[in-house]
Length: 359
Image 1 (cartoon, one colour):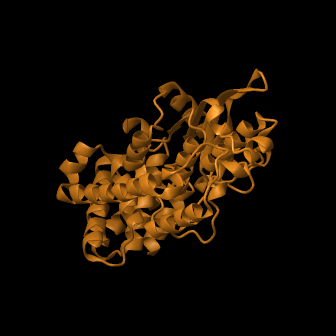
Image 2: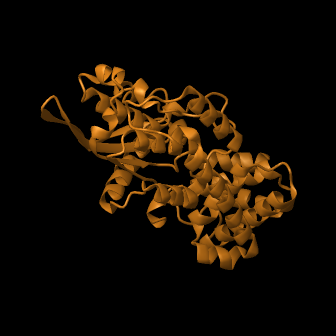
Image 3: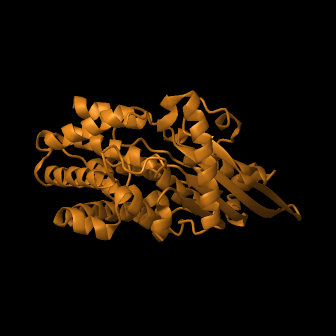
């Protein structure tokens, strides 16, 4: 555990100490067979952090090939734990699945890791099937109508209860992309993806220089254009340059954003290992909530429309693009589907690092 703690700390904070990390890698290789699930998960996260630092290409081994060997051994060791231990959790599977995909493509994974990769990919595919079926059939989403419609409290309670029962935080890079594609939300505008990625990488680098502990924050850039016909005239709202917001309590931009209106019923759900339900502070949820608030402001008579049970959400047209620096969690994926149900003619598109390979 001491070995993996050192690896996690240095890579998480992007502290450059190649000699130390090479020694850590060698020690990890020598002790791989005795590592428990937590050790393996921390080593996987360390290797993912290293791959995420664009200026470092060889990882923290002496060569790229040695790093690939370490990645392969961590993956094989975790698959063995998944097969034979009752101490593993679904989140362990997608973490290692992402680790492999960050360092090699799937053909290389089959070649380097073999049957263990096939088993791991099949396991995460089963998690995808569970989540996809839940989102299709949970009453809150299955019977959802545009804003202005009544939402059953029992459906909201069942949604939160069943979501927690999944005991899962994410589906990882590949299967989150597949889920977004199945829902029609996967971004295809490559120019937007590249611009958003470059802007957020620059912002992130400047923040890390001042506050290294901010490395764990998720960042989001979103832009939108929406319009509707109200009281005999067309009205619109737009943000074409993009708003950048972080998933932390101290982000000043977050204080300027709107909350989601009550009638949108956007639910953020506490996930596995969350001590509190802080998912409303996730950057992508803040983007969805803000745009929902903007949409309501287009209707000066929204309260009377609500009292008359008029589904005003179906009268808004436009688009919303969201780029996030990490794979969206399941709570935010659920919120995206809620948003699409409440505003069916607002075209939602979502991207993140690696999502462009999922189309």
